[in-house]
Image (tube, rainbow over all chains, first blue to last red):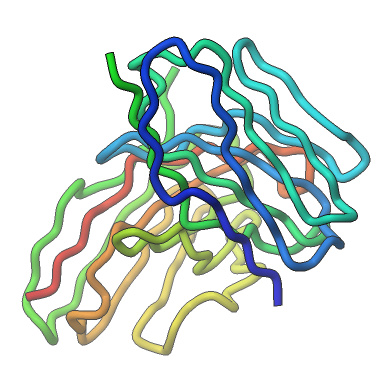
Length: 112
Length: 115
């Protein structure tokens, strides 16, 4: 059974710092991995999607890496801003027709 | 452009009552998903529609939960004899198709509270 774990559960950092959020998954036979952002009372916004054949994806100040063999992914946020404060969720799709399994998320707070 | 919308945004009901939650996907999206998110948890898959048919309902917790999508667009999640443990945010998502390269677009959710 696929399980997704995110560490830390919560993180507070001063504005301007670079930071890394971690995600691990127990079954390396994944088809893709996504990072989502969730703001309070809002739905999820997909930030980055990494196919199993890829090692990383970048969008602006965000960079996500994937190491399938070790069952790990990281989301790197450069030059953090107060507007980055949100919950970040990692999710994996085990194969093409399988459902997405989410982690519990990391609650990020950027201190002005 | 219009995203995924869900109504109501909040629903408070009493134990034992019947509720319906509605999802309007992005126009033209054939795939539609329902998830349930409890406090402090990530979303958990409930059911997936491809067009009008439920292609995967393995996440529905029991037979009190049922979902329909009769015309391949709007979907309704129905919960009978609600229990306090059903309290959660119910999220709907749609995508142009269901495959590994297709991003799911999420609605804001319906917060269900069962008293």
